Amino acid sequence: EPEVTQTPSHQVTQMGQEVILRCVPISNHLYFYWYRQILGQKVEFLVSFYNNEISEKSEIFDDQFSVERPDGSNFTLKIRSTKLEDSAMYFCASSVSMNTEAFFGQGTRLTVV
Amino acid sequence: GEDVEQSLFLSVREGDSSVINCTYTDSSSTYLYWYKQEPGAGLQLLTYIFSNMDMKQDQRLTVLLNKKDKHLSLRIADTQTGDSAIYFCAESPGNFNKFYFGSGTKLNVKP
Image (cartoon, rainbow over all chains, first blue to last red):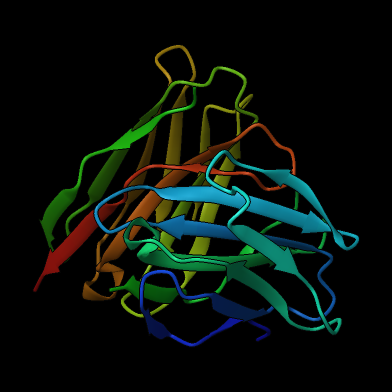
């Protein structure tokens, strides 16, 4: 069964460093998303991406964040200068269209020290 | 803004029914969802209901929606140990799969 895969499963980085979280969406999907869950809090929407551009983003998704699809298969989330409060589980998701089922990856746990 | 609330824990015995409750605030929600997360895995869509429906049944799962009270519930009949997981309620206005999730209810099924 096709699935969304995320790497790495756990990333530890020093405060101020740049980090790139990687996702391989399901191959025929056209819409891509990032969500995050700070420990003990709710899963929060970060950004949606379609046709090589951001469709919608939340207030959380500030200038420190960027997304791209560099090679037609990977979908990445970059945090330019990580802060302690960026520590969270980051989930990637993809869907065929904007209102069909979104399939989520297993998440990348980011720890900023 | 949108807010989705769930209780954090539920413990049941194997074979009993589980009922997980959720309340939401956004009256414009078009879709309401239940996702399941097993340890080390992603969020798996269990079922969803359109806001113009009251009930949806899918094998052991029954979703009830009280739109007036903005209350959603998930009933799992004959709960099994394999049902132990975190269950997330989510709502969406229907555009771009932008979900508002609850904090998740951790279901513990005791043998």
